[in-house]
Amino acid sequence: MGAIILVGTQWGDEGKGKATDLLADDVDYVVRYQGGNNAGHTIIVGDVTLKLHLVPSGVMYDSVTPVIGDGVVLDPGVLLTELDELVEKGLDVSDLKISGNAHLIMPYHRELDAVTERYLGRQRLGTTKRGIGPTYADKAARVGLRVQDLYDMKIFRQKLDAVLKEKNAVLSRVYNRLPMKGADIETEYAVYAERLRPYIADTVTLLHDALERGKTILLEGAQGTLLDLDHGTYPFVTSSNPVAGGALTGAGLGPKDVDQVIGVTKAYVTRVGTGPFPTELHGAEGDRLIDLGGEFGVTTGRRRRVGWFDAVLARYAARVNGLTEHFLTKLDVLGDFDTVKLCRAYRYQGDEYDHFPPHQSIFHHAEPVYEEHPGWRTDLSQVTRYADLPKQAQAYVDRLEELSGVPIRWVSVGPARVQTLDRE
Ligand code: GDP
Ligand code: IMO
Ligand code: MG
Image (cartoon, rainbow, N blue to C red):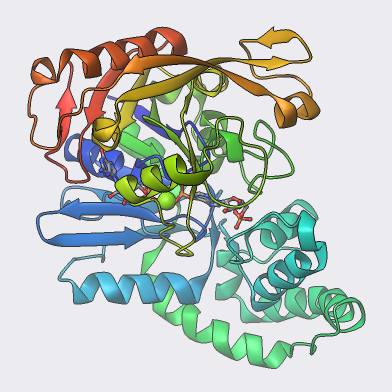
């Protein structure tokens, strides 16, 4: 009994919501440790589909306590709307715990996210415009407001007025936008404060006490390894650390508390937003994969970019996260191809790279070196035992496992909880 970290190994949307929900059956706490409502995690159980942005994906289970940890950036209005929607669907969210150390997304963060993207033009990142980057920037600059500030409105207003001076100057003089009024923001956030009060908790103490009592904690990553601020494809990344190391800082746990690190990995690759993507497919083949995989963003509705599986990235993710196993998703989506490709290395100026290149320019211009495997041309969605998968599909899974260097424990063949094959 201890902590399990679950991370995305690609550019997000690997199926972390589904994997978390499935594993939540055997855990006591599910903790979001970084990111904010830039995330969109889908859970499907029977007729119910949940698209969660901030609430941890263990919320469907009565036995699970959902926790929003210190490393999350929280938009209180968005969270309250999400909670209302869950209650409307008949879920009990009363045991949600929120860290007072989480940083608040403020209206000027959302506005700055939108205007800086516009300003960047062709060099824009394609952010979700939820204010994530500006909020983490203020956290690092030590001018952020935290959830706990909501419970001392005098301090809240003091900090707000200090930071608004600079934000309003930037908004009005650089971006030609209207300045924001401290009084309006205070009034809005005071209402949120009262509604959020029952959920505020000392989450670090709560989680450590739980571990001492032999409980199991699942740390649910948002985004993915290649979107990590330090280890991803900077600057085309998010502003937090989705990798396993970020789970520890974001939840306040130590390395010794962790038993397992599970990488959620799609059987192909997708990306939303801009940035390099060596195995990206354009044209009819890409369109087909988008349609078959239903690859449209949960948060912004944007069409995702798609490409063949990239084993260089899978190996890199295995290392920087210290993965102990993979949860492979969406194998069923490849069921309609005569052949499936996977990238085992990159080629750049005559050299071959089987590791993530140390310079971004190489990655930008990397040409994938592909292996081509026979497809299985079978609908996998009803398969219930791994051994019943067509042998070509098993061979593909074995090869992914071999190239990434980490065992593939689960293979997912559909969005529903039951469409999961456990190889153990
Ligand atoms: P997350 O952000 O990592 O939680 O992933 P998203 O929810 O954004 O995107 C994953 C999408 O794939 C969702 O629509 C899931 O319902 C769906 N999904 C997850 N696993 C599978 C699978 O094995 N097969 C298929 N066909 N869909 C899946
Ligand atoms: P989940 O948790 C996919 C991407 C955005 C953009 C970049 C920066 O559902 O996997 P941000 O708003 O974070 O400043 O945007 O990161 N991005 C995601 N892409 N899945 C996500 O979350 C993402 N969260 C952010 O598209 O390229
Ligand atoms: Mg998503």
